[in-house]
Figure 1 (spheres, rainbow, N blue to C red):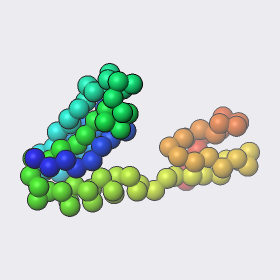
Figure 2: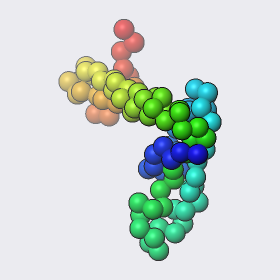
Figure 3: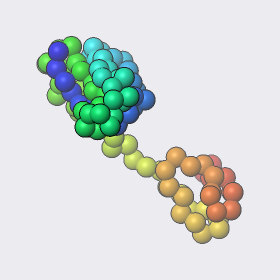
Figure 4: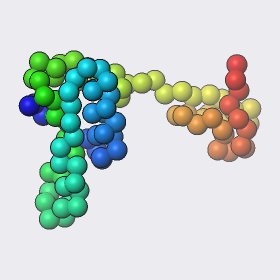
Length: 101
């Protein structure tokens, strides 16, 4: 087994492990319950980790996770003049919905 990376929380760790498994790499989440020990242990030692069963998958797995983190962010200009970024489909300022063009 080979440690691939730490995740900021259990939800993201599970998402990453599932993505790797769907891509044909056997991955698992370790230390998923260690968050309860935060405060007794250093915080960076309590983060969940992604582990791969096969060391030869490390380069491909890192590339796949990097692609996931580098997804382009959508942004659009609302009719009220506000720039709306991220996955929002409604303007926070005036409540107008994103144009569908």
